[in-house]
Length: 314
Image (cartoon, rainbow, N blue to C red; front, side, top):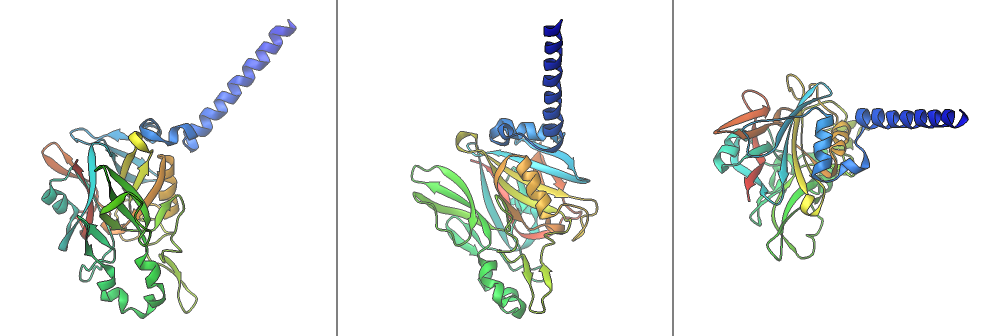
C-alpha cells in the first residue's frame, strides 16, 4: 500500500513538471532545441499559428502577432539567392520584383523622401552603386555632423563568395573587413542590428541633440511597421528569413512593433543574427503566387522606395 502511494505521488509530480514545461514553452518562448535549423523554425511558426501561402515557389507564411499582420519568406540558402536591387529613381517594391523576375522581395535601405537619394550603402556585383556620403541632406545637415561616422557605419547584409564559388551571408557593420577567403559580391545597408544585440544607440538611430533632447529617428521605442532580414541555423541547415510586419493603417507611426519587440520575435523564430531595414510606410513584402505578384504587407498604393532585397533562383 505504501509503495503504491509513493508511485502515485511520483507520477503526479512528473505530470505537474510536464505540464509546467508545456505551458511555459508553448506560451512564452521557443526551447533551446527549437531555436536552430529548419525543424526549429517550423516549430516556432507552428506556435505562431502561421499559415503556408499556396501557389508560391518559396515557403511563404502569414500570421498575426501582437495585433499586427506579418508575412515571412523562408529561403533555403542552398537553393535560392538573396540579392539587393535599386533604381535610379524610386519605384515600388512590386515594380522592382517584377523587373528582376524575382520570387519575392522586401523594401530595403533608407532614402530621402524629398529626392530619392540613398541614405544607405549598396553594392551590386562588387560595384558600389549607392553611397550615402554623396547625400547632401546628410552631409550638409548641421544637426547630423557629429553623428555622420556612426550613420555611415550602420549595419549591412553582405553576400559573399568563397574561393570554391560558394555563397554565404553575413550581417555586420559597414567598416568590418570582409571575411578571409571570401570576396564581396553584394551588400545592402539598413540598421540597426537587431540580433544578437540591438545597436540603435551606436548606430545613431537614437541620439542626443545639442539641447539635450533625445532624437528617435525611426521610432525605435515606438510601435511601427517593420521590415527585417535574419539568418537561422548554419551549414546545410542555414535558412534566411525575410520578414514584414505592420499594424492597421500603416501610417508612419501606427500600430506595429518596437525594435525590441521585433528582435524578440526573430529570436523566437531561431534567428542568430538579424538586421532591421527601412520601415513605416516603406514596409512592403511582395511574393510570386502562381503567375501573379501578391502584396502581403504594404500600403495601397505601394510606397515608392530606393532599394529592395529580392529572392532569386540560384
